[in-house]
Length: 301
Picture 1 (cartoon, one colour):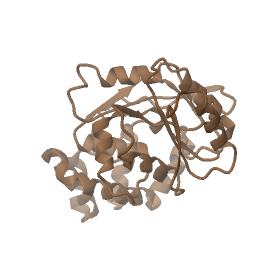
Picture 2 (picture 1 turned 90 degrees about the vertical axis):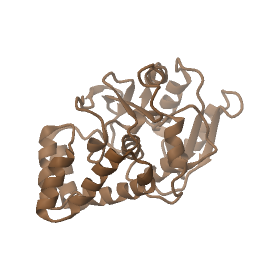
Picture 3 (picture 1 turned 45 degrees about the vertical axis):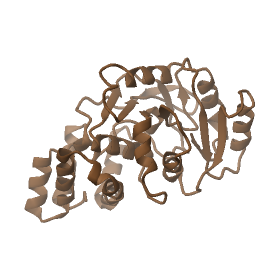
Picture 4 (picture 1 turned 180 degrees about the horizontal axis):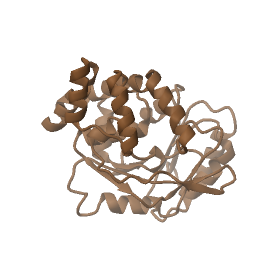
């Protein structure tokens, strides 16, 4: 869990972890410099459990992405599975149990790298239901991951082998977001990406959210304008810094897709040809068309 001045909703999230039907959990909290009662609430929560069931660490103080990455990069946090956790959501009581069962099912357990993610049920600051995150239907693979994440980090559960990859990366590596880079790296290694259409988390939407659900037409239009203005191109460069670190470990066909993606920074004809032959896409056809236009104007890489 990454925390920063989260006292307002933190206790509800902690309690939802405490009542999980999957009991073999351990909570590692990296607090990024809170000045409210966040650390106090975590320490109080830790007193309810045996020693080392809940551990409080001090984060790097460089924002939420760097905070989560610092946990991924540590080689002294060992477990068979890991789950990202935000400070202001509420977990449904069987969230962990469902995720672990899917990750260990006969059809999924054969792959070395495994990642689980799901939809979320959206709630407001007063816990009123306000809808659900989008329901994705297309394949979850590298060609999609380069253009978007597929699930919120607050839903993700992943296996030990996937985390080990992050432990080998430079400690000062910059990432855009922990959920997106997790999807990118898992798919880059041709890992199993599981998407659960059933939500097991109440995702709180409020003014202090660092990353919202991005639903609604006006929200999407505003976001696209930012991406077209250069935000996405900056993100791609950051993501590619991580991919360069694992490039030699990628399967040949994935490496070819990566080379095609990098070619989207070439001449117009080369950009168009590689976008089409590379088969890059977002889960929405309309958004894929919008990103094709961005590619025409060299706004992707």
